[in-house]
Image 1: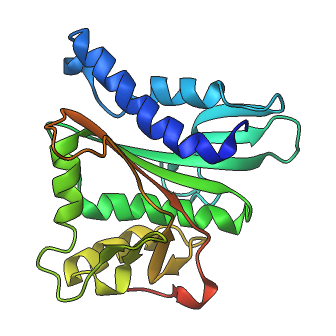
Image 2: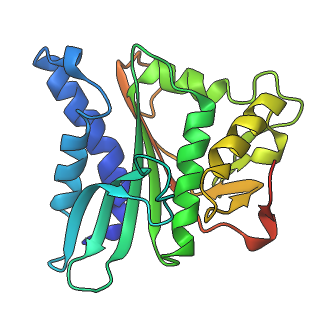
Amino acid sequence: MSNFNNLQRKLSEGLYAWMLYEFSCNKAYVFNEKYISYPISNILSNNLNKDQNVLTEQNHPLKNDSKGRPIQVDFVIADKYKKPINWEIAIETKWIGSTEIKFVDVLWDLVRLQNLFTIYPNIKCYFIIAGNKNKIDKFWNDCNKGATKRIVWETSKGTYFKLSNLKITAKKNINELISAYPKFNLYSKISCGISYKYPINDKYNMTFGTFLIEVKNPNITHKILSL
């Protein structure tokens, strides 16, 4: 991956610029999670090393083979020569537009990324939300709303999600989701890198925005059986 340290910035700013361009071409009516896969694939493909491939909608390596359609990862960058296949980067995405996204669905994406480290300890995992900037801002501002203890917080070192502070209903939802995947591990805390947000100038009422974080390898001391 060339200029690897800038990948997060390229994805965040490049995806935003593409949405603004498509909006200017009167194509906003077709925006959805599937539609933004095109610019993301383009950005990834043009920042690869010669021995890497971009793969989309790949089955999660810890999938439950007995449970219908397997869970998948939106984007994977893998070494094209190594056998068995070696995932080097994984990306999950969410689109927020006319319909809201659920906090539990975001947490479930993060949990699924966390569990990739079991198979690929050196993998880089990223989570992206793109769409209506005001709704993205509202979504993150509302994460701790009504909670007795903070669930999400940001510091100069990163973004953190403390699942043990979730409300009872959310805990139940996560427990139910993970119970279907016996190879998955559950952790009380999800640690992420510093968030990349674009645009960052709040004085303008921007139509679109992006939010990107890197999900870190979970701390084994945070491993739990259930919430």
